[in-house]
Length: 410
Image 1 (cartoon, rainbow, N blue to C red):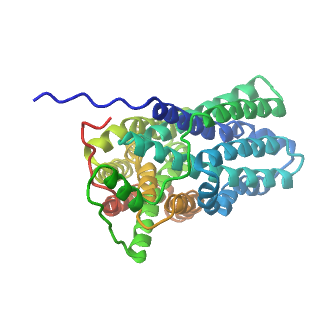
Image 2: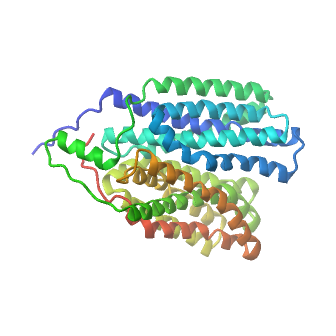
Image 3: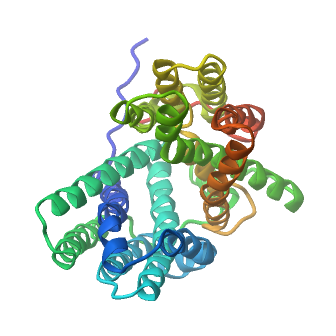
């Protein structure tokens, strides 16, 4: 029997996918442009370490304060419009932060940029999930991979501007203009119409359209919130590992293991690089094996890889451990977002908003907790947070979908 070729994806859907990818790219690049400017800002404003730390902390604080507003805004104005508006306003906040004449203005603008970034993040993921449903297969991981490309590109743009001694206002103003043009162009190709109904109603409508009997599933509110809690912990498991690489990899490699500073940087590079590869491969793996199996495999890979590196410490082994951890957690945040967006009985954007908001706690809680443990018993023990996060995912992955996508889907 000859299997018929898969149907072609409509041009409108392909265009919408490219548009969402462009929004993820800009979201990763906007704030990354400012990071290489931090040392100059600190010096120009005469900030001490404590003042500087408080100013920088305003960005994640703003994200936490405004994150829960995303669902309401999406339902009222549409996810594509909210994502683009958030992109423009994040650019404005980053630009004004770069031009800040005082600590108060710097902190205030970073707080504002954090608010807008959180709303943008939820909105672009919400629209990406809309496009994914039309494709009938997983594509969300590729969007997150594009975000990583944007973050690296933005960092390189900022570093080049510093090297060429381009004034902050010129550099950040031009980058804001560039990303505004990209976002507004992308808006033209996003999906039209209002946000979709909640998953059960959507599934029922599709069944009736296909001439199939409608099927309703009843899920109690208590069970839904338990599922949300599990999805939040899965997402936090991913962010804990990411933060460990960003904050502690170089410190551990150089300070505890005595690696050269240049070599020590490869801990984070290995984690981010393998995470990017994992996300590029993730959609195909999810379609073939299901979210649950991939998350469990990723959790086991993270726990075993970093656990072995900490048990038998060496510079090459630790770099390999961070690489395995990055690959293991690559699909966790997209998987948690997808699971939250598909929960029955919730209005459009509600589950996604809650999970996106609470997972940011991982970035706030992880550094001080690991630091306290490191001061008490050593950083090697503090980094046990990585294999523990992998084990947590392994235990909770049952909340994710086990379904595989048929090969005949586009």
